[in-house]
Length: 279
Image 1 (cartoon, rainbow, N blue to C red):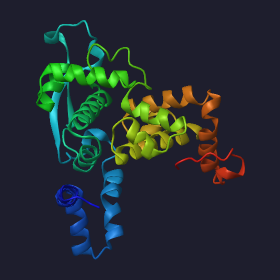
Image 2: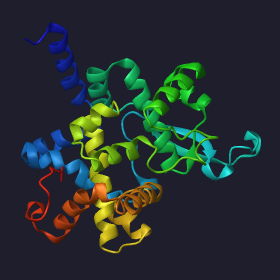
Image 3: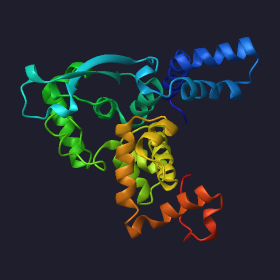
């Protein structure tokens, strides 16, 4: 039986989802151009892919803030007053993802999810956040940030903060962990549960990895992949490194068979060992 609180929460999710920029475009497309809801629903992504492939010229999204952070090339030992800064667009609020995480995992998991998200976004844009930055952006003290980082580290997820980013590898970020869980056999729902993330976000990470992997198989270089997949060069490098490392591991072979068959346009079941994959 659905409780009153759950019903109210679901109604709140619906109301909030109707207030986004994407929903505004969808409504105008349906009312002004006569598009069906399905046709209008894919329009925001199509517009973004065609007109805003260059990440530096993408429009601001609801819930994003502009924040100056230390350039990732500055290194951890350099004085802050001597460090070059870079402007970044950080997603403090993602209504769909945040409501899902809050509902399924609670407020603490939501804060940790936001922490991972903005730290990774900064890194992908050539910057790096300090624990102090994270505290300011998430409206909490540094002790809370340190505790969250420690909890995530126990789970195998390392937040790319200044001082640690030089040592972080591609499989240690939350996106890398999501891909690793998938390579090991987990399906997206199980991956989302394992890293306390929304299913929507996990599916996006996996789709991005698969797109990069397929483009690597086609022989494209980093610049071409970034343009074709509409991703930042930093994220492309992360997924390229994961692909190169993972393809050598026998335990992940069936996942790459799925990708190869998908690339060739033939069913994976013809030669796979029967394990399921999410493509």
